[in-house]
Image (cartoon, rainbow, N blue to C red; front, side, top):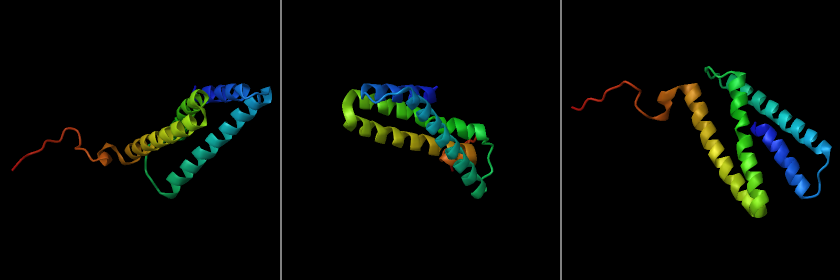
Length: 128
């Protein structure tokens, strides 16, 4: 849903700038789709080359790569409301938040819940 919202919002932003044409929506959608496919292929190659054993499938990586469109939509909306300065601030914030989320999520998925530094569930601590 965020992918389609991004394409429509990009079309609306171009329309506000008087640069819209119907071909732009198709070009924007196909370009974004190609980048998603390239990103998933790069992630699969990275997982393969790093010889990481995990239960992550291609669909998991596709879902994780789709999260960036939420930040892109919010950044474009902020840019429409507050201009280019607001856009760049929102883009930096969303990129940082997405980086934090993806690293923590993929670390948990590949290394397990014990990799986050907490105690395993069900363990008891004994004091001496």
